[in-house]
Length: 266
Image 1 (cartoon, rainbow, N blue to C red):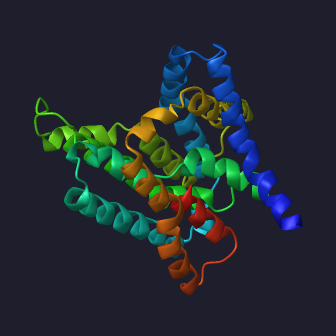
Image 2 (cartoon, rainbow, N blue to C red):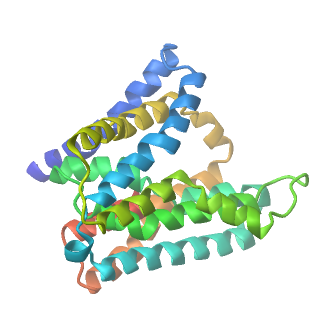
């Protein structure tokens, strides 16, 4: 019972904020314009700042674990390529391939994931290293897949330059790279800058969760119930069932396994 209560205390608050967001959206406090603006603010400003700060706090020379980062990278790459290949072959409605692949492999590692881990440990745990190994691939393939699989005959095949530009200008990826570089420098953020950036970064999770709740449209997902159900099961159960035993066999434990579970199943 203690374990159950601990688990509920770590997870339910995240979902309850989304429920509050949905209720506020239905009451008109969070209109679509708010959701659009908050999503843009989160993606371009607060989330990159949060990832920058998470990466900047790591002592790369002391705490960096290449085996763990490479495992996150390899699992993410294999998952994406396998799901993408199978979707192109098996999915009947080819216009859904891009969205289906996104929903099947991409986790909320930076938003929901960090919130869960902080609720469990009181700090980010292994989340920054997991983010370093997985989130760049999430965002690189997000650009590649949605540009290549863009539905509709009006879309021309993307040029390599377009793909490269979309990847290198991704704010989330830039935040991770900047934080990694900063962690290698023999300097610390001044107190004034640190408090200011942390104040902005702290907006990420509540703002994103409220927006997710307010913009939730379950009826649209039910219109494509088959692909939706398959993608949801792959993301929450399938990848974890395959790769968590592999992680255990390789010797990962405790905080490492929690971070991997977030990466694979959130």
